[in-house]
Length: 470
View (cartoon, rainbow, N blue to C red):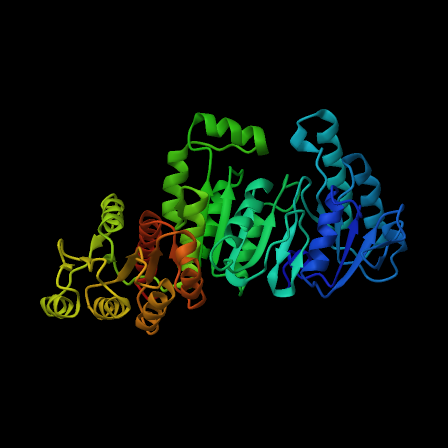
C-alpha cells in the first residue's frame, strides 16, 4: 500500500509557487535545487510577474497549469498563502503541499495562529496533506529530488534518512554530512516545520517502512505523543538504527526549545530512560551524530565489546585510551599469546605490544606493510570485536600508500574498522580513499572511540531483544 508521504518524496511533478529569478528569494533556491540536481519530473514555476524562469514557462497561477500537479511548494509571504491554498484545492489533483512560508503559529501571534488554523482546515477538508508552515522542504536522492531552500548539496546516495524539528539544524546536518572527506550518503531528508499536519511520528513511521533506509537521524526538541513515538521507535530499532540528537537537556535549553517550536522538552532523565528502553541511540552533538551515522552505515556492528586500539603515534593512542576508559560497557580486547608473538616478530623492534593488553603502539617507525600486517593479525584474533586504527603519517610514510595498505588488510573483515588519520590536508586524499572503500575516517581519536561505543551499544541492544540473531 502506498504511504501518504510518498506524495511528498516521489512526485512526478512539482509546482513552485513564488518561483523567482531573485537569488534572495526562497522560490529561487527551491527552483534552483530542483533543476541543478537533475530532478526528472515536471517542474512548474508559478509567478504572475514572470513569463519564463530558468528556461521554463512560468504560470500566473496554479489553476493555469495544464498538466497534473502532485506536489506544491509554497514560498510566497504568509498573507498570500491562503489564496494559494484555494488554488490548490480548486485543482483537485494535488495530494501534497509544503508551506515554506513563515509567519504562522510559530510567531505566537493571534493573526499567525488564526492563519495556520484556517490553512489546516482548508487542506483537511480537501484531503490534502501538508508539511509546515515554516518548513524548508524535503529531499529524496533516489529520484534527485530537492525541494528545499537549503544550499545545493552533493547528493551521494546512501542508507541514511534524516528529519528535524529545526530548519537550521536540518540544513546543518546536510552541510556537515557533505563536508566529510567523501560526502556522506543519504536517502531521504525532511524538515517538519510547524507540524500543522505531518509530524515527527509520521516521518518516523515512514522511514521505518522505507526499504532504502537503514539508519535514521533525528534532531528533536520535544513532542506531544511521547508514548506512541517510543512504541513506534521500539519496533523500528529491532531492524534499523535510530539516532537522536535531543536538546533541552536542562532548564535553559528546555525554555529555548519551547520558545522555538512550542513543544515541551520535558525532564531529560525521562527521555534518557525512554530512549534506552526503545533502543534509540542518543548522540550528544552534531559531530557525534555524523560520526555515528557514518560508522553504522559503512561498517558491520561488532559482535561484542572488546576493542583493540592500534596506533602508530603514542599521543593520539593515549587520547583514544582516555576516551575509551570513560565507558563501562566496552573493554580492551585480549590478544592471544600467539598473536602477541606474531606482532612482536612483525613490528619494528621498539613497538609496544599489549602494554596494556589490547593496546598496540607500533611507533612512528612503522611503514605501510607494518600497518597492513598488524591490522590483519588483530582482525584475525578471536577476542577482538572491533579495531580503531590511528596514524599521524610522517613525511616518509605517504598517506595514500598507508591508505592502500589499510584497505587491503580490511577488505574481507567481518569486524568494524574505524580509522583516524591525522591531520588536515596532508591526509585528506588518503581519507577519501579509505571512505570510498567503505572505511569511515574521523578527525580525532575521541570521535572514533565514541562512534565505536555507540556501535557496541547498538549490538548490545540487538542481542537483548533479538537474541543476537543479527
